[in-house]
Image (cartoon, rainbow, N blue to C red; front, side, top):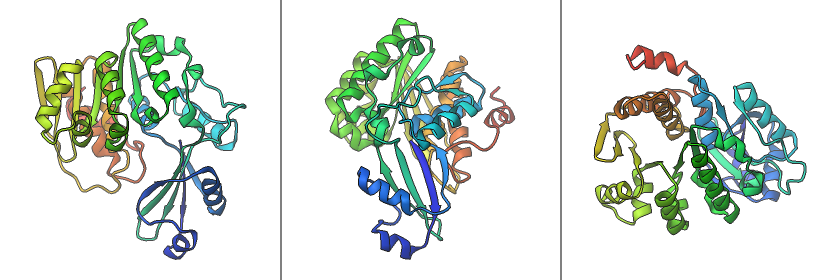
Length: 317
């Protein structure tokens, strides 16, 4: 997913029929119309797990992003941007992709409000035939994005990737991504979590949606029976991490966000860095919280500061 940003006034939003301050999905025709209407565009590689990998790369670990872009201007930009950040992109831009590269067109008003119009495009068509199993077999940690679960070929790709990861001795996990996504595919998500996942990261709303209960503790108890490692973020409240009989509640230090975009993505980056480097759960959780706090202190969903230096300053490494 490429984030494409431009500044505009409220009159432009009204003229283009853009609802201010929300994210809405658009079809190809609408997406091309909005993209063509953007002036002085700036582009940045985006996507939830893409942002997480950028954060892990910022911390110095080797990363690869398995995804699908079309061989068009935005697709080539995405591939080159990831590689420039140190993340391998093993899937070359596809000349035979039916859809253009996925994009989120973000119109920034003078008051700072962001109005996002997302065209799912080629990325949502990723299927098992796009997966290079050798890449996944060689990884220690596989991290899947729940948003891709909306299509059958995405589900098939997840299963194939998780099995390949386990064949190579790695651990597979998923971000639940969105409570509405969980609601649409609850039975399949439950099956995947129970049968294939070694760890799952979600927020309180997503866990409640997955197990259909407003009692968060009851939901987490069911999750604990299904999966070896469970992480539950709760906005400004303590993060709950469960592994077997081990339970950690990691305190969150509240800060006033400049831009909350990417907080969950960077929490995952810090937490997975902690796991991959053998840290205890409490320390990995603190790393996640520090990474999340850094990203909400500025605009944009990727870290700007040296997050590893922030860990060092807190005595974590």
